[in-house]
Image (cartoon, rainbow, N blue to C red; front, side):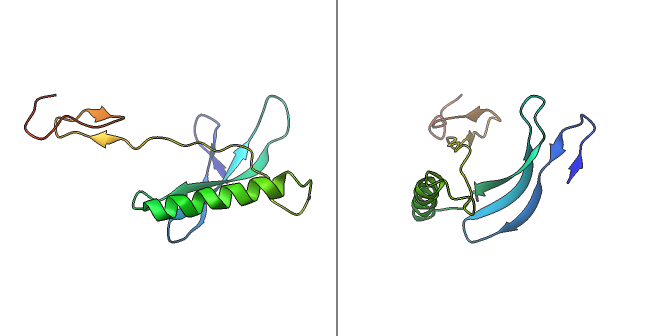
Length: 104
């Protein structure tokens, strides 16, 4: 893993599957030593079925994480971001863009 010019760690892709890719990153909090973390991101072409599989995977990992088993990955955080829409005018919307033919 390398650092960018600003001194921040640059995540490295570990692999990808049918609906997501996995990156290796570094998490550092305050003066504590950095630790390696896995970051899983759904592909932009992921379907609703893929999202449901991902949600199921998260639920299973949460249950295993609560069991204090040192041989199981622990979930640190889950972020769910809304899709963004790029309008033909160049603006980015977090919900729906104006209907076609209407001005922004």
